[in-house]
Image (cartoon, rainbow, N blue to C red; front, side, top):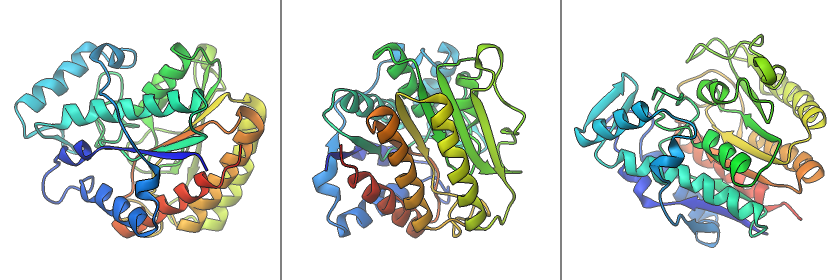
Length: 314
């Protein structure tokens, strides 16, 4: 067993105010469930530092970064109707990015087999010049940039199984053949992107794939498609590293969507990805928390996901 959970209490200081679905209780529920299972303390790995502003500019414009800095200096503030910040949100977002950087570095160094980053704010909706959908900076995209630029990898696979399309991640690599972006999401649903005909552009054509599911799709139908698509992507792309935007809002009890997955489904999804990653890239997998807004369903799904990560044998 060589799995870690990257987390810091600073993530709780990102205050989205009363009634917001993306709130600190999400991480509290995850921690409580993992503590009950005896997993939290053994797997906990402190994050050493916040990422630099220069590193953010690998994926985001200076203007976008400054807008978030200014909003936090004048907090509480809204970057859009859904995306709220408090005085510590910028600091929490920098730490969330570096959680992914440190996790990918540790896996590349062979210190860990895999890792789960229990972070907030989430990231996959954040575009190069726009915060949206609860997201400030694109954590998973910046992790991919770290693998490309620092570790000089040539093929990074991002699997986004959040119920909402990861528009920001798609934008980041739409014309890039080094990153294959696969999103499985409900359609129609926020943010309105993620059609199957969005396949990339230029050199990235064919390296962007969107798999859509109608509201109410049964879990059996979802899993049949998942078990068809995931091996195909591994076979055609042969990734050197796998990043997962691990949203758990496709759960049947989630209030923001209408898919029908259960904790057992998320366990099976994790297991399949790990099996294929073992064959193609020595099992190198890092996942990062995105959505999931029913606290019990979220906590149970994360427990199922982390339990599978721990089963990996190098």
